[in-house]
Image 1 (cartoon, rainbow, N blue to C red):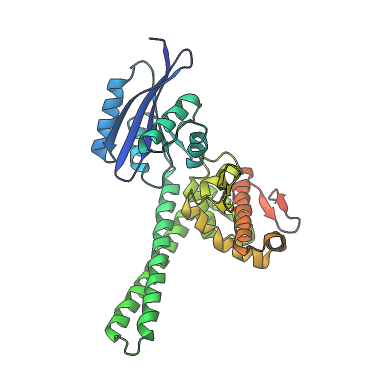
Image 2 (tube, helix red, strand yellow):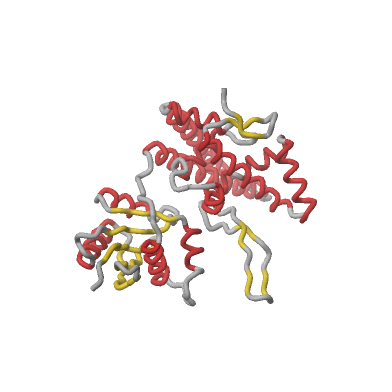
Length: 341
C-alpha cells in the first residue's frame, strides 16, 4: 500500500444520528473513501465512533474529523471530540454545498453527503476548530432563550386577541393567558439584565459592542447576537462568507436554458443571525440617508421592497464584521469607517 499522508472522518450530522465515511489520501494524492457506518448522535455513539475510527485508521497518522456547522446538532459531538484531543474542522454549509455540486453525484443521500464531506477534508487544508469562548456561548444561550420568549409571547397575544374578540369570551382563559404574558415580560427583563451584566464583565467585548452600535440602526442586542452566533466571527474569513453563513446570499435555480427560477435568498444558514438583521435594516432605511438611498434605488429598479430590505441587511451585517475586525468606528458624517479617537 502507498504511504498514507492524510486520514479524514467525514460526518453528516442529523438530530438523531451521525452518518460517517472514512477516507485516506496516499503519497500520490490518491483519495480512497473505504469505510462507512452510522452512529447515534449521543455520548455513547460518540464513543463508538471514535473507537471504530481508531480501529480502521493507521495509528501513526493523525485523523481529522470534519463536519458541517448544522444548527446545534453538531455541537455536542464537536465538544466531545475536542475534549478527547481530536483534530476537528467545522465547515460552513455553503462550502460543502458548493463543493458537492462539483462532484459527479446524481443522488444526494446521507451517505453521499458524508462521503463528500470526507473527500472535502482530504482535498482541502482545513483549520482546527477551537471551542467557543465561554462568554460567546453564554450570550448565545441567553439571546436564543429571549428569542423563543418573544415568539411565545406573540402567539399568546394572538390567542388573547382571538379570545377577547369572541361574542362570549372566557374570562378565566383571558386571565390565564394574561398571566403567562406577564411572566414572559418578567423573564425577558431578567435575560436582558443577564446580557448587560455579562457584557460589562468583559471590557474588551463591551468596547467592541460600543463600536458596532455606531452603525445606524444597530443596537446592543443586535451586536451581541451577531457576535454570539459567530463566536466573534471565529469561522468567518470575509464578508461574502459571512453573508452565506447567515443565509442572506442569493440563489438562482437554473436547468439548462429552459428552467430559470426567480433569485431568492438561500436561507441555508444561521436563522438567528439572519433574523437579527431585519429590524436594524428597517430602522436604517428610515433614519439613515445612505441606507435609504440603497433601498430607494433597488425598489425603483425591480419594485420588490423585501429584496431591497435584504440588500440593506447584508450591508449592515458586512459593516458589523468590518468594524469588529478593523476595530474602527462607523463615521456617519462621511459614510466610511474612521479610526476611533
